[in-house]
Image (cartoon, rainbow, N blue to C red; front, side, top):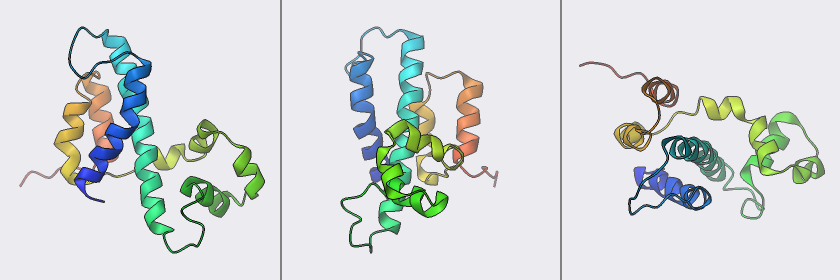
Length: 141
């Protein structure tokens, strides 16, 4: 995936969340706690979107890959769940099954500065922890 693909996923998932929390991209006063909650929710949706796209590319050879959620295919593959069980799950249930995977998903190194700036409203220690989880350690060289 290109760096732009990541940014596109962020923009796609952030739009409904920003609307839900009444966060405008044109400025204006924003309640800090509401903004932080929206960013956390967007980050969760973003990581799920990135993982879905990685799986979509991995499963691109399957005849039904366009019609089936790649997370559903992965859940059947990993957990041996029956397809009807996976189809009955809502988005949160499906994402819960992949919490560990999403919490350690490594992102394209070129996104480090962009994501750090995007997460700027979060408290420093939380932001630093997230950056460490989703990027390889930086080397001073």
